[in-house]
Every structure is written in structure tokens, then in C-alpha cells.
Image (cartoon, rainbow, N blue to C red; front, side, top):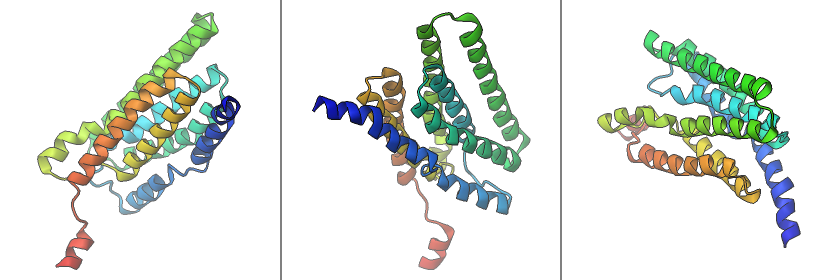
Length: 227
């Protein structure tokens, strides 16, 4: 039994996880959503802050994967980083106001500064592998919490308008699936650095999905059809 659990922890789950990511299974809905938005020239009421959070979150975990030499962590986040670049560029291009554009650009610059400071400290200051790994996982955990909590930034609007149109269902679904997979993998290899932030991500994603469906409004086409 122990041997089978070890095989599952070291090979099966990471391979499944990486297949999901490398095939863009969790990211494909965003491409169709953003392509449609680029064609129409508008993102509508969507909250774009989670989109830039994808970029910072995946970048931080790529750094952690490199430091601890874990190819599973690296390759699971590499496609997400590229998708984050596409999300960020699309969001900046389609922002409705200059204020929204400034927020996204400020977040991206801030994330870049944090990652550069982490890279410098890891390579130039810290002298032990454990210290380097601890710093990178702490930074990655902070980005993960921020990513999973980012849809909450529009909750005030959702409750006030009783309309969840500013929440992205593909993003919430991806967040729940992603956090559940990483929590499972973290438990299988007893890595608290993976379990804690992603376990919180599961709870936040379930909460946000509940809010989404509680305040979901019928589409315009559905409303016209029923009329």
C-alpha cells in the first residue's frame, strides 16, 4: 500500500496535474472569452484584477519550482504564465477607463518588482538552499492568497447590484479545480507550502461560486426568448 501511495504522490498526480495545465484545459475558456471581448472591443462588467493576478501567481510558483528543482511545479505554471500575459495585455487594451488601466499596470509593475527582489535575494544574499526555498514559497503563497481572493474585489458591486456579471465563471471554475488539484498533490507529498494556500483557495472558490449563482442574471437572449 505504501509503495502505491508513493508512486501516486511522485508520478501519477503530478502527471495528471501537468497534463491539465500543459494542455491548457483549465485556461481554454479564457481564450474564447477574451477573443470575443477583443472582437467586440469591450470586456463589459468583468472584474479584470484576477486576470493580472494570474501573471504574478504563476510567475512566483515558477520561481519556487526552479529553486527547489521541481519540474512538476515549473511546467504546471509555465502555460499559466503565458496565459497571464495574454490576459494582462487584453485587459489593458480593453479597459473602459484610464483609472482601471492604471490599476492593472500598477499591479503588474508591483508584481515584477517583488519577483525581481525575490530573485536577487535568493541568488545574491541567501546562502542556504532551505532559506532560498522558504523565501520563494512564502512569496508564492502570498501571491496565491491574493489570486484566489482577487474576485472578492468586486463583491461590493455584486451585492449592491444583486448581479454577478462582474465575476468570471471560467475563472472561478478554474480556481476551484486548480486549488483542489494542488491541495491533493500537496497532501500526497506532505508539503504545507502547497496545502495551506490552495486549501484556502478551495474555500474561497466555493464561496465565490455560491455568490455567482445566487446573483446570476439571465442572459439577454434567454430573456428575449422567454418574452
